[in-house]
Length: 306
Image (cartoon, rainbow, N blue to C red; front, side):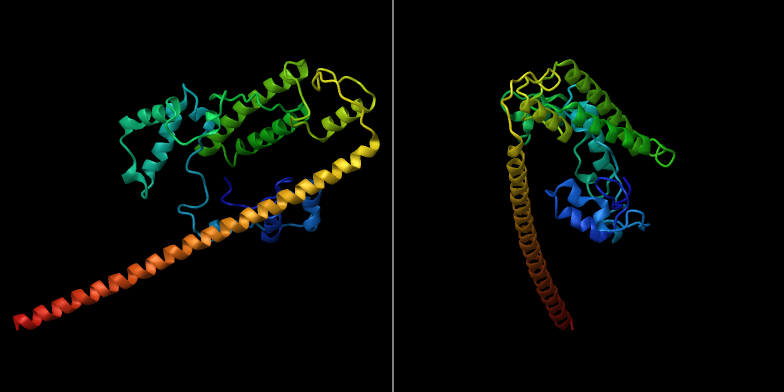
């Protein structure tokens, strides 16, 4: 929304390119190690820094969204066709893709085939027992985690409904979507508090909720409905450090796997780029040879006419 402006993931403050690069290569590091204060003076004034692809003008029409699309609406049987029309209209308005967009009369048919009849690529909704819809009952979140989400959504709603943004259609669309999600989160919070959603250890609990469950284990207490009514065995204090060590090892493994995949992806891009460059070079030589041959033919024809 901000044209590729680089910001800190946690504080949303502006950051330098070096700071941003560090964040990108450390996705599995703890939040404390990625804290804003570790990269310089927290009170320092940082000038606006933009993503290199945006700063160099590599993105046509700038790094701003042309449309805001909701996946939840796209797979909704009532609002899906309208959301499909938004995508098609955006492509139709682009000079590079407009000539290749199918006629408007066929847009609803495309949606029906992909969503209703599921003839498109496999998605998470193709899993056994899964169906389209907003609510995913496979995992639950604690009130702690849901409140964090709600706070972030409210921050974005306040920002993008302000005077600097409320005249932009894309910002208004984003705010409308975020408000829908806040309503879903509020409903989910009430369900957890009432005990309708039972939390288990495999769910996304958050550090404070997980610590509260650990303390209840230490007293051989059955966890209340707020945490999920599962009897928990006693856990001694000296078990905490091994668990922390395991988390650190898992983080290291995740970081190594991430870097490995990143290197593989970079090599794949380089191979594709090399193939494209070789193809372009070959095509250039072929064009030059054709031009040379065409020039020779013209010369021979001129000589014949003389």
